Image 1 (spheres, rainbow, N blue to C red):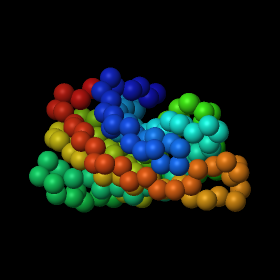
Image 2 (image 1 turned 90 degrees about the horizontal axis):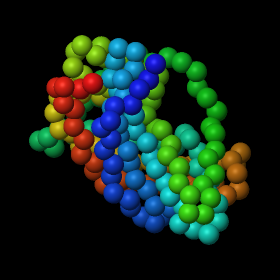
Image 3 (image 1 turned 90 degrees about the vertical axis):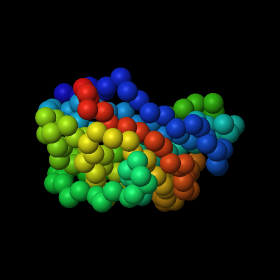
Length: 168
């Protein structure tokens, strides 16, 4: 059973880029005895036409500690099914959030006071502290996708987030 914690960190809206404005959302999630960060890319359509987005963008991420040092990624087991891409159509003046964290990566035990952050092909196990997430998200041209799908790259400004000793 998954439940979202009340803490949610949002970046400011940036753009527009290709008719869309963008932001990031990070929230701590309690999952069967472990903790992980759910990360969403959110897009709002400011154009006059509907735009489609894939739920499987390419993701490049770096996590930095409070001193600005890049954290090494962790090696964690992962397993589960790989799903085909699905498409979300954003109507004019509409909004969508697409979850981009890797949900099939093994979680650290909750009693260790650590939480997982897994993005793209990298994972980090982070304890109490302040961190900075640097993220680049790319949506590729897909010949099998809808004709109105958005393709391009969004470089998000660094987003500060923290993990506290009294996590849920």
